[in-house]
Image 1 (cartoon, rainbow, N blue to C red):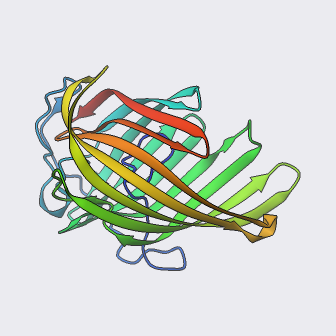
Image 2: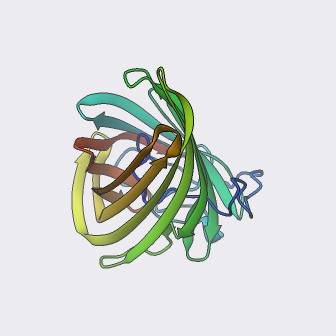
Length: 256
């Protein structure tokens, strides 16, 4: 769970596979899988995807959507995540939040879901920066198939960003993030989308960033918590990094 990503995608571990920026085994995304319907009532039926893509906490059903209210350092936005085409081996998701668009390619394995590739594009005018963010290597599972109190896992993501700063040009930035996650308990969480029985997942992320062109090297540790509802997905998240707090709250969802 990465990861908290831009906005609110399941942030448990954003990643990719193979080196050189072209993941091996990337799924062919055609022929959607059918499903039954659930919507923002707080009492959804568990995931209807089948086979390796079935996961109670990230519902791989084409057209499924989750809308979140996002607050980052006091600045508010709305984030919407949508599942794209699904096959027996993988699926895609697209998350839009403000000026950012995040595209993720997921692989379905017997152990759980792996975020093979993530690309984030957009700009942050107040910072004078623009990013094209690409994960190219992953070690570990992003979201295990079976979650329960006491479950623990890790994932390590390597990524490359072209970072542009006003007046300073563009240079690549390399990042390695190691995330350790554990299900620490159960909570009842109420949001505008309903009241949900959830698993509480805590994550510790250690990030190493290097940008030789800007002569920058940073090392940081951040902590975050997500609440995951069976048959729905993430309903709330909180975290902090670099002195900035952030939160996401589910306001609506629809699973066709």
